Image 1: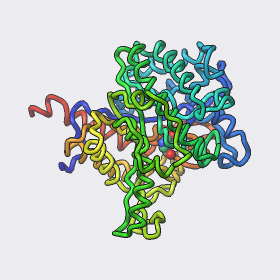
Image 2 (image 1 turned 180 degrees about the vertical axis):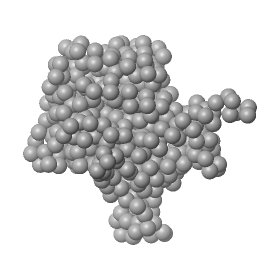
Image 3 (image 1 turned 120 degrees about the vertical axis):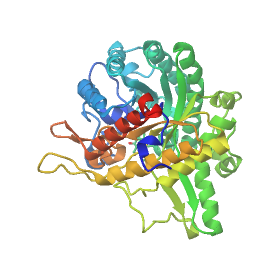
Image 4 (image 1 turned 180 degrees about the horizontal axis):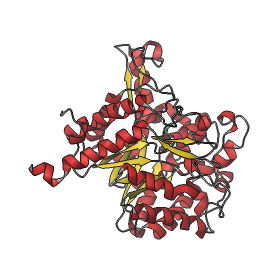
Length: 450
Ligand code: IFM
């Protein structure tokens, strides 16, 4: 592989940055936005660190022009953001809030005016609270509500938006939202979690056709958070636990989407907590996709006795996640070899570190730069091995509301000074921008012929 990272990638490779509505927008009670499960959850004492909420967040709602100007400065091809369902349908279904649609209209137009392609995620976890009150994702009716929402958004934005992601990380939305209760809505039930996961997947499958009909230019995918789960050494119990975790975290979502079936070993383990699958559901879930979005940050190693192992030689991020770029390579190769995924975008990858603004006002983050370089190199290796990876999105563009961790974890390549909401591009922002510029230069016709 060439040393110069920029020359590894094909000319049409897409460089992007990713965000999500609740994590950056703020303006949680403005212009008719309804309540979301994250408003309710973060207002509940003890659920989010130091009681942080998304009420103001990064104030992207008011500062999107300034932020898009920074995206332009960075030289990005694409920006991934999500739509807040409660801005569009404050009660979850029925009444449409035009002011909510208008906001995303403006964001899309501003991006296009700056030559940045919008990648729109429909659901990044901010379910209207009104729907949660009627059962949330455990209820099959929420699937119909999601279809209604997808239709409304696609009709309004579909003339300009070509890239659609139905859901972000259904594993987290279901397992953490309805199983462990660490995320909104904070329920703790295994059968609720599996029902929620199934309905998220079903709503995805149904929405694919809706998006294609309402937005004829649409290419449609879903984003899954996938990780490499490995057993350390030959310990049999470690191998068994690793397989079980891989089943729940990875195969539970990949198999229905790409094979039209749930993995039988996981179904057996679930027993009575298996999801309520009806005839036709798996056919809908496995509707062929245009692309798969992959979010990857770290790997999991299981040691003797089935316990997660800590690697004393590795760097860990502020989330206590091991830095292990090969894990992303392994995931990408597996998607080609085991699931024949046609096109992949790495829709999130990045690292939280405890960034500090220096006396000179700058924010230097060499650890994040190293992290990004290692992972982008791993993507490059996958591309060279023939894996169809078409783009890479750094998580995240801005420091933001990191769910139950509140604002304590900084993932951005742009620092947000929360008291003033000033944006300060970090060292990694400049590094990433330089990579993109060098890639363009290496891919230009002059460089090809010269
Ligand atoms: O911040 C989250 C994002 O919302 C979903 N993927 C993982 C990120 C880091 O935890």
